Length: 357
Image 1 (tube, rainbow, N blue to C red):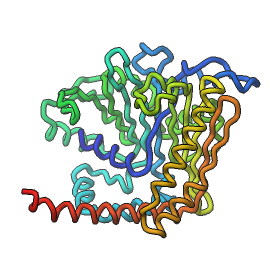
Image 2 (image 1 turned 135 degrees about the horizontal axis):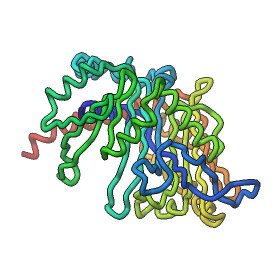
Image 3 (image 1 turned 45 degrees about the vertical axis):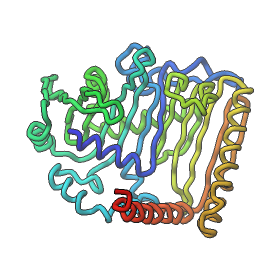
């Protein structure tokens, strides 16, 4: 089962990340821009109260079908050819090829502050062979336990946390030919199955995810990637970004249109003073990013500056918006440069290792 988890994380890491939504988000919105945002009552069908096993504070979604059609998606798939052999081997073993069979990834979760514990659910949408995958899991997963849950088999197994070294129990279910559910708790997986194991789980997840951002932060596009969060103070905010605890809701999306990559980030703050501070912080980070390009190759530096200059920041009362609209060639050329640089650095490290011994 861990193959599914690692596979999903790899694909998420190709160009995405983030979060979105909870029913309890905040108080009523309205014509007054200073009032907080209203979220739909049950945006994730995962419960309203924090004590509810399905209560969620963040969500992200990557529509792989749409992503693969974009220039960025084609670039990523082309770069992945370098790893064709291990991907082909995994695809043959799983009878699941992510390059063709993965439709989307939806993730959601929260943080239990009392126990400093992260809780989350991962929905993998695609074309699966449930019987084969279940047999494979039973054969290859140590200490795998199985619990009959209606028409489903709830699986559980132990995984060692790489950071703490602690063993943690993970849960999962091969729900159907279209859906696999994984989670940090049995109740979370059960809750997700109750609401997402339907005839068209991917379409339902997409509809709910878009509804969240459209109602809360007024996003209008249907992007290939979206993410958002509410009650940010309940999430783990790094000390250097303490101001983000003043954010009541945030969201961001990526789309591609007419050869340009378009990104949109929206943050709603508790008050106008906080939104001003957040705007200033973002402007400072952009300035630092431009300075960091100094020392890079001239062509790459110019490209980075062009990308950064395409980012516009706007503030309206408590809402801060940041938009990016840049040529896709700027992004792919920048990624190509960084990948080549990383390879060169690895070669240097490999040559220096014997010397250190």
